[in-house]
Image (cartoon, rainbow, N blue to C red; front, side, top):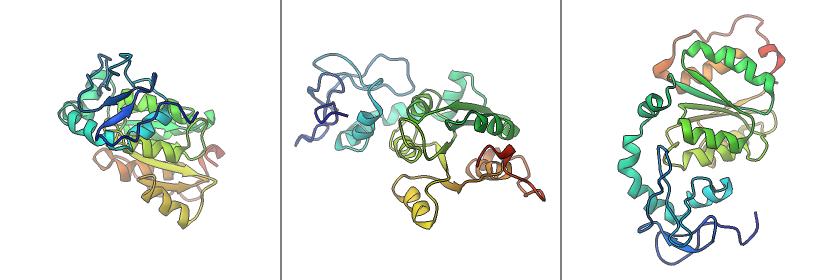
Length: 238
């Protein structure tokens, strides 16, 4: 991202942010809502008239960790309550719980879909972090299970982005990794990236069930005991 690319402005006035497109300074206090069909509208630039619904992931991450985000969240509080997970499910026609699986290995998606189908909800799929975030904004999943190492956006950064966005902060996030192993990385994932569950590969089908059961207790409906001799799910989640 260029140094001059649109990111929230470091201005003295609370709620000031730079437009994602023309870089002009706006106020989160006075900017108008956009007219996009979304569970959570964004703000429009007072200069160019464009909203930040389709801004880059980097811009959104910067915005939602800036002082402008506090003003924005205050304004959207009532709107967010109107778009709870159950409302989104009805609007999108999706059976709950909605579980989003994020991995760039297609075989992982095949295995995960078969295992998580036992939950009786909806299993969605994305192959990179940016696409996952955009899909999450549209569908408001109850649980996101993501690989740590992804194209475009790291799985841990995806978790932070989801947890600091009012529309998706309710999502439970589980990160699965073959790279970031050990207590240090597990602690960092929870404290810095707000990850709810952390598992090291290889991951068995039972591990996936256990993650879903623990993070979605209201929907738990199957046994998570480890069958004797169970191997990793077709070797796909290694």
